[in-house]
Length: 126
Image (cartoon, rainbow, N blue to C red; front, top):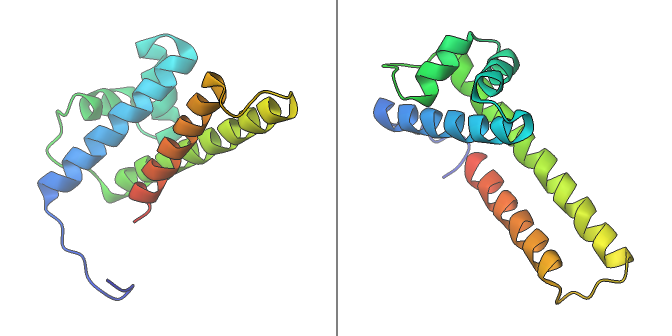
């Protein structure tokens, strides 16, 4: 597939993708703030939509999604994944500098998370 190829996608598929992205972003935000309401409000602010819109999207209670909101969802997910890759790369670098052995469980776990983030990012950007 080249850059000039039109890609026709089903609206339902796009909607389920947007719902999955919104759920993932909400989960990531909940880890940071430890409160579902605050996580949704923070996500709404980042997406420049109302908190009710985020709640409806996360619960799959929308019939259609505005293209601008969909694009902001994808951009936010990409930023989150890129940030996670940088953080994990730094953790791995620090662990290696501290003299930890590459066979260490923690280093293996960081490498696994780093690879998962890279895989997710490559899937999102295609």
